[in-house]
Every structure is written in structure tokens, then in C-alpha cells.
Image 1 (cartoon, rainbow, N blue to C red):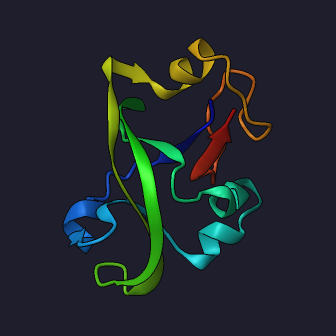
Image 2: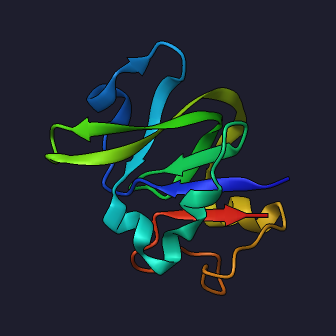
Length: 130
């Protein structure tokens, strides 16, 4: 199985910023054109409806697994720029919070852009792990 791990270390409250979309559900994450162009973030282009995603915050842990329902370009009023907003719905939850790198290791997943200990590198916002 493959997953998209999303880096929200700044703990932006996407659901509050964008609200709930009637058809797509809850806002999980957002990114702008500059972030998407960064070499480490090309995995954003692979995210499609039906993909599974986990989001980690400042504590670097994951708990909920979401099914991506779509991406919509919206204006981020707090950042004053257009952003791509990924929406989703809760798919399932892990029994307990787990460091994202341990989730990757335990599930024998990988991504060539992660460091040898499965950590995100500087500038990484997303990793498609499979």
C-alpha cells in the first residue's frame, strides 16, 4: 500500500482556514506554486482522489489516515496567495500516535528523497511512500 505523508510542522489549521467543502470534505493541507516546484515536492503531482494521506505536525507524529477526495485552487487569505488545497475524509485511525518515520519503517515503505532514517529533508512538504 502507498501513502502520502504531508509535513505540517507549522501546524496550519487548514480546516479552519478553508472551511468544509460541500462535495470534497475537510481541508487537509495546502501548498503553493513555489512549494510544488521544489524538487523534493514533485510528489504533490501524484496525489489523486482515492490516495491515502497522513499529516504530521510539530510533534512529528501521525494518527489519522485520510482518503484524498480532491484538490481545489483557493485563495489563502491569511497568506495572501493562491494555494492548492487538498481535501479528504477520515479513512481510519492508527491505534496510537506514531512518529511518521516509524510509520514508514514499520510498514517497510520508502521514498528516495527521505534521508536514511526516513526523515524529511529541508524543504520537503510531501513524500509519496510505497
